[in-house]
Image (tube, rainbow, N blue to C red; front, side, top):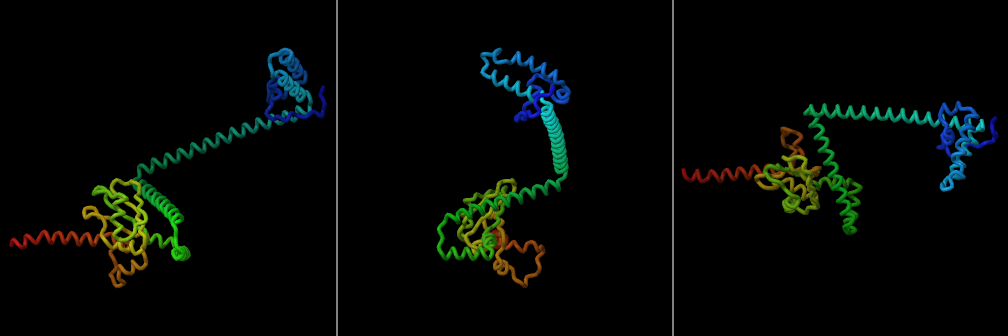
Amino acid sequence: MAGGHGMKVSDDEDVDHYAVLGLPSGEEGAKLTLKEIEKAYREQSRIRHPDKRPDDPNATADFQHLKTSFEVLKDEAARRIFDARLRARRERVIHDSFLDTKRRKLTTDLEERERAAAAAEASDPAKQEERREKDVAARVQEELAQFQARKAKKFAAAPTSNSKTSEQEKNGENGGTATDKERMLKVSWERNLGDYTAVKLQELFERFGGVEDVVIRSKASKKKGSAIVVMSSKDAAVAATRSMCGSLSNPLLVLPVQAAACDISGTFSKTTADPINPKLNNIIGAGFQDYETSIMKKLQKANEPKKNNK
């Protein structure tokens, strides 16, 4: 016979009332008769009654759970609700398992595609070079961002006068970032001819004006060394690009990050013939002309004794 129809299902959704009574759960549990449930309850009551376990502090609570589970299963309405809850729980487990399997397959497919792409790239020198160029460009952008952050931090910490503040505000309104780039120089050299440190670069460039910062790029290339030098003014940056820097055995290639408009107009005449390579328009210094002149002078001095001997 069914129990009270107003029976409330236990609020603890994790409790399996069939398992509490030692009965099979799931679809098999749903087929059990009331007599089978009552028989299981009587057997469990004899075993788990608190009088049988005087030394167990949890005996009373355990026995109460047993009674609660029995009350749920002997009530037809409450049992139907509980069975439906069990089915939903099983379906959820199956669904989650399916999703986990699908996610694992997607992850495996992605890893296989990445490995295949890496293998194809390893066998293609052009793709390797393209990847290296992208990595170098990303590192340059990162180093530039780090430098600008340090510069902003220094500027915030340094005291400024009202006139400087107004000038900086004006620069900010009219393209302060562009002005900063006009004071920044890209410097490169051959490492196999001798390396340059940040201190040495600062000493070399201080003869053109104040040097705010020198950032040596990470040694990604064993052959080429490079750095970013920030001059205190645009005029100092222009002067540095117009003069030879470094030693004669290993001159520095000095290029502006962004050439100043006045520098370009002053360096190249409007009447100059078209260059061989238009891309060289921005190379307004680097000291190559001075370097060539110094070599020619050395050759002339070396030939003078020969002429005198004749």
